[in-house]
Image 1 (cartoon, rainbow, N blue to C red):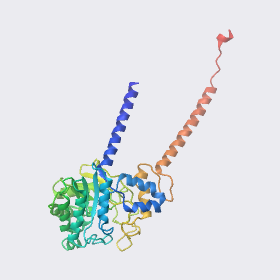
Image 2 (image 1 turned 90 degrees about the horizontal axis):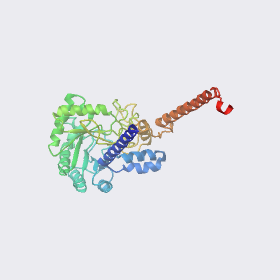
Image 3 (image 1 turned 180 degrees about the vertical axis):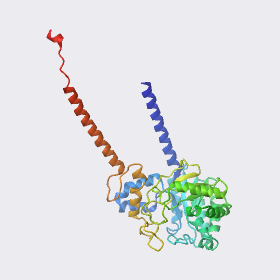
Image 4 (image 1 turned 90 degrees about the vertical axis):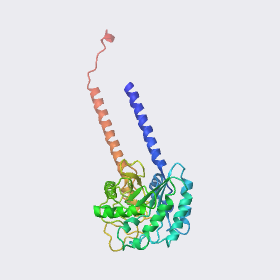
Amino acid sequence: MKTVVRATAFLALCALWASDYARADDAALCSISPSTYASAKTEYPKYKVAIEQLENRGIATWYTDREGSDEHTKVAKRLIEACDDSTRLTTVVYGLPNKDCEAGYSSDGGNKDSEEYETFISSLADIVGDRKALYILEPDAVGLLGNGEDSCAEKYGYRDNLKSAIRILSKNLNADIYLDVGFWRLANSVKADAIAKIVRNITSAGRVKGITLNTSNYRGTRDMVQMCTNFQTAYGSKDLGCIIDTSRNYNAYTGEEWCNVRSGGIGHPPTSKTGIDNIDYFVWVKPPGESDGECDGDGHTSDAMVGPSAGSFFAKEFELLWDQGYFVKEEGMASVGSKSGVSTGAIVGICFGVVAGIVLVVGGIWFKRRQSSRPIGTNFAAVA
């Protein structure tokens, strides 16, 4: 009896710990749903449950100049209103003039020069105030600076604009700032040394907590941990930690494609409890289902799917990301694809139930036969 009581108490303690763990994850990072998801749930009702799962776990909010005049300030204000003071606001800052200067898929935006960019950043800083914040700065920028002095990034002033952003945002002592770094720039020591030099120069402008890897990409977590280690080695310090964008990396793609990769899968949900020493956060930076671009030009491989313009909801990609990702593979949730209406977890459960039923039936038959084969005893007391 004591053993049963102890076991019950232990299970209760585990349940309490698990609950606290989940609440800590939920409370740590806060964001608002991507604007594309509201219309997607209406247009594609079969995705509604899946999309709501993602909304509940939290996708980083993009503060960008690509969504029309003053829309970015409205987004920032909605974020403040939606998130409790105890949470950390999770924000991707994406507003450099002439951003994405190499590929050009996301180059549009309202900020035309450094002055407008500084106003854009200052507006965010004023709205957030001294709230706890997690900023991921300018996807692709440092990676493009890695192309050298003649790069389009240097031509368009990425370096100085990043310094301005850091200087302004780091005035909030509760802000954790991470510079986005293209992981491919850390693949060998020569490239990593060059990036470390750029990061050291840019971070001289203010407080920076680390770098972000795998933004809007598909590489596996294990590979990104190694890239973080490569960076820290080149930087000569572990003072800067790393964030990994796990939004589409469940299947650990290793090819060269970056655009609407058909083998992607939604990865581990956002958390600060990564269990990895040099990884500070897993974050969903790229909203799963938002297109990387048309992906129909030269330089793309057969791994890419032709899609709508960058940032638009891409139904086929969302379907594949969900069906091939964490929620279906790890949590046993239902697929949304047309070929499969039952999840792997559900199939396993059905099979288990069938096997259990067979065992019970066979066991019952055996028990009845055993009972009927026993000799009938005689009650001598009654005969006498």
